[in-house]
Image (cartoon, rainbow, N blue to C red; front, side):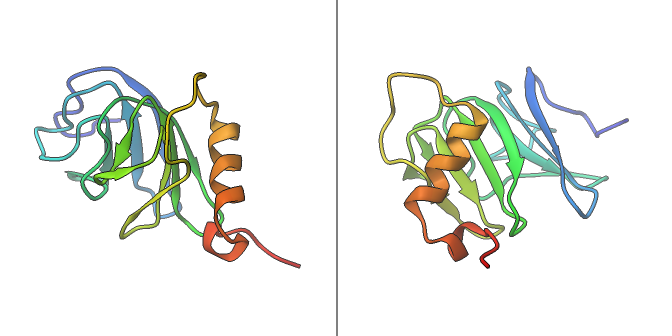
Length: 130
């Protein structure tokens, strides 16, 4: 699958979005040379783009939330300039922190999502209610 000029580093996680776009996370300094795509970028089939201002260190896990947002976990301390302790989600327009500080252990994807959900109202996290 050709993805432009690609990333210039390691990709640790790939997420297929419902519209066919790909979101990739890893330890790369940029995707396709586009600004703000270090560690995290979106490929729409013809070009790379950032998710806002991105994250400040490597990404190790990605997951699609029920509301269409992207949960991101890794070794970063901020997303879009907002402190988040290695766990955040992108709602399509802005970053939402899951935790405000780093923990002494690396978060797994499940832990990242659980941390996000317990710190936000169910509706905001995109979870279905019954």
